[in-house]
Picture (cartoon, rainbow, N blue to C red):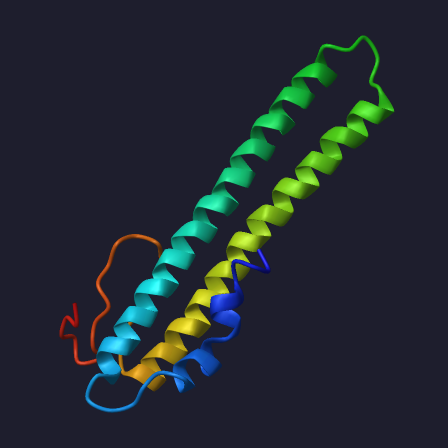
Length: 132
């Protein structure tokens, strides 16, 4: 996740490095497109991990339920898998907060509205006009 969030972490540096002038909006739009690609990748990664962990939790709970007497090691395994799944869900929440902050920075610095979800949505100007 740390590697996938580098684009957001360096947003001020990246925006300050964009060429100024009449093409600033175009450069900002290209940067926003890069951010949206990053968001989609992070979302797929997080949701994929959550899916794998949820399936593994269910499988291990099934193993536990079929045991004659509860095995503490199996119970610990289920608890650890549930903890990891919770952590991944928390990552999704943190990612949403980062997206909101990044969108606010883009809005202030580039005068563009950037979607914060991975659903395809065009980048638009604050006056409601479509910039795509």
